[in-house]
Amino acid sequence: MAEEEEFTDINGNSISLDCQTHSAFCREFTVTSPKLSLRKVMVCTCFIWLFAYAVFFFTENTTVLSSAIILTLAGMMIHIHFVKVDHETLLIIGSLGVQLSSSYASGRESTIFIEMSKLKDIVINEAVYMHSIIYYLCILIKDPADPETVASVVPLFQSSKPRLNCLVHVYRSCQEILAQTS
Image 1 (tube, rainbow, N blue to C red):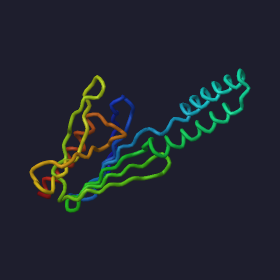
Image 2: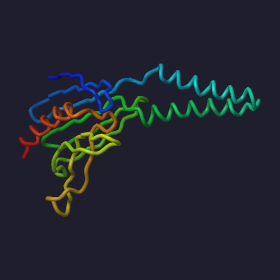
Image 3: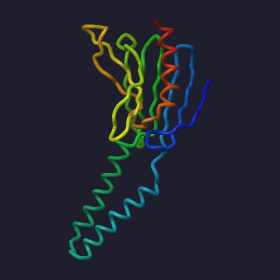
Image 4: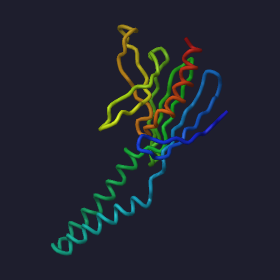
C-alpha cells in the first residue's frame, strides 16, 4: 500500500512524502525535494560569465575567462554530486533495524543502517535555527556501556527539512512499529 502526500519544507518549498507499507513490521518513507532548477543554473552561470567577460574587457587577460568557466563548471559538479539531494528514504523494519538513504542529483547514493538493538527511540526534536525554531526527526542511539543513556543522535531528513506536520506523520508510523517489536 502506498500513499503520497504534499508537504512543505522549513523554507516553504513543496516536498512530497511517499509512504509505503510493506508489512505490519516494515514501512518505507521517502521525502522528495524539487529537482534542480535549470533556470536558476542558467541565470547564475550567465551572471558569472558576463562578469568575467567585463573584467576581461578591461584587463584583456584571458585567464579571467578561463578560470570563470572552470570554476563555474567545477562548482556545479560539486553541488550536484555532494549537496543537492533528490530524495531521502527511511526504511524501518521492526525485527532488523532502520536504513537511511540519500539519493543525490548526480545519481550517487549514501546509505546508513542502524540495528534495532542499538536503537533507543525515534523522537521529534527541536532546534533554534537562525531566528526560528525548527523541528526534526531523529534516532536516539543507545550507549553500549549504559543502555539507559543516549550515546548519539542521528538526524533524519537533513536535506529536505520537512515541517512538523510531515514529521508527525512519519513519527507516528515509526512508533507503531517500535511498539510492536518491544
